[in-house]
Length: 453
Image 1 (cartoon, rainbow, N blue to C red):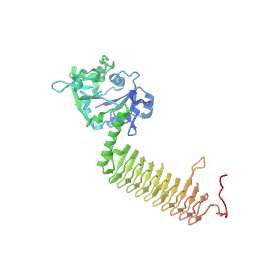
Image 2: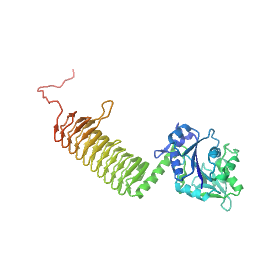
Image 3: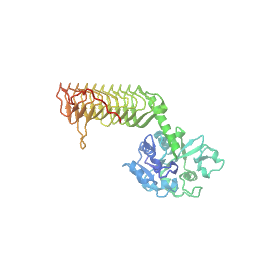
Image 4: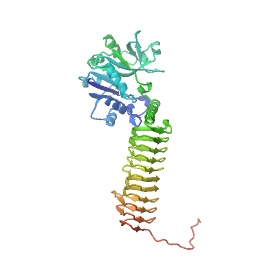
């Protein structure tokens, strides 16, 4: 079936009280519209059309992609009018699936079910039974439970307001009838808008079947008109992620206090403490422990590693059986080989740390190649930047870097060599050597400290 998807994303969202277009407000670190687009892509449609208006340039700039057709709605005259703007680009469509840019929790399976039920000849509606349908259009059925119409709340009678089956707005239009139906819409209603929902009555009048599908839960079709509702969507999304992780074999100390803001791939027997945030693409292998208050972004953690509390990892690769933290920061380009240890208040950047090597505390290792079984003492700095260019430090296998050493790159410390504590190393150190570079100590007897006058 030739399927086209139309996503309505032109609204201003005044209740957000924000200069940011409503559909760009994030859920799990991704714009709401981004979630909807990803869901649409999973259906493999012929084309995805995104109807934009308020903040159009900003929306398009942030989410532009080759498979998206951007359609301008210069005046916001209702949902029917919005879909009509995309019609000229839907030639040949057998079905037009209408989605909304502020409904980010939709599941692909729900839309597949709706699309299959409607096919190319019927009108498909996604409805939801709600405890409190306030604000939603009501599904009006006849005595045989056939859908007859959708009545918007502002136009509903007292009896119709008692109906708890609400319209989600998500609809599958038969492509061959969409143009005629949308062209027949009237704006003679309480809001003076062209309602897409009025096509239901047109379908009934033409004896076109109306097929109804429902989501797995009310939360799946929730939209966000203000920041309170946005927060509800966020927690629902995170609850789903927590359930997925625990089902996959992850122990969460508190499922309500973990955030997944991207793609998280996990192994088994992983332990995650509270307030851990995963961002971007993260992969975690078996038997990893992640302590409280860590942020892990676009990183890979191999089996058996232990990430201690308050550590931040970004674009880092952690090998098997490593220890990181607490209070460590692994910046982009950090790669730890098996059994490496990065301790508290250590920062690394573009650093390859060899197997079994240790940087235990209070050090900065940047633009560095560190061999295996190296011990880097507290307060060590690789001085990699000369004010214009970055330079590399090489520390070969089994070297020992004394406390408070400054390694001025470019420089190489040879295998099994030692730098004395407090040394500033500006020249290469040969293998099996001791490098000492510091002023000779003088003791002045009888010296008195200055006193206030």
